[in-house]
Length: 279
Image 1 (cartoon, rainbow, N blue to C red):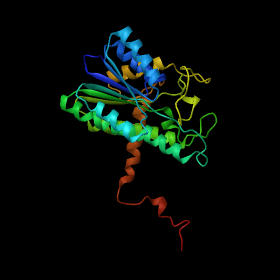
Image 2 (cartoon, rainbow, N blue to C red; image 1 turned 30 degrees about the vertical axis):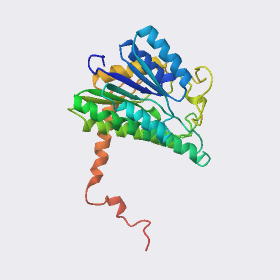
Image 3 (spheres, rainbow, N blue to C red; image 1 turned 180 degrees about the vertical axis):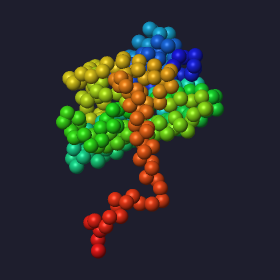
Image 4 (cartoon, rainbow, N blue to C red; image 1 turned 60 degrees about the horizontal axis):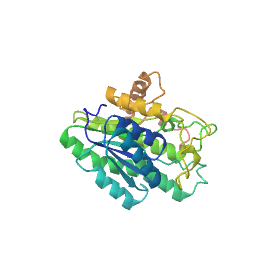
């Protein structure tokens, strides 16, 4: 995606560190003016100054907690402005933990940040993009969207988090099909383990102090973002930065079509056997 293809300001949520900060750096390097959104205003201010000095672009900062309705409304108003040509929905929290033990309030916050916020912001951005005939939305999900029944260890306890990322995958793919032909592109990027501070907290409060990386390693954020932007240029709706065999996405779509064979008017024969039926 070159800046000449979808001109305009880029809005990046969760921009204070990790993948979001790397999107900001890459997009500034392409000459994009930026609106950076995150909870940690001091980090945003430092990043904004660095990008203004190094890239000569305009950078606005919005300190906001997207789990708060009033903050989300403020960001949505900015996203709906006519100058916005790219929205990167990167903000997310994990809420990891065994489902029967996780604080219900934290799980509600995971849903608000990971599902409600990107939906609301995408809805705010898309109408003006469609009217102009150009624009793009990138939603940052996770390979945990496809983890399904894999047990915890080494994967985290993740029922709600993985569900929210599965929502982003389905939402993005369906919206991309709906917007085909409008000039507006929609992508979901699904990184695996990434070298960020994401795993250093559950999301109740932002990680304090200077940016740092968790101990488990993973793909550098610079590679995640480079893959996402290259995939957007190539027309990929689903970008998996570490996936060598891109046909796996096509096979997933084929499997889904096969499941759709179950939309007929007759119940499958295996349910008519009578075994286990109450009599």
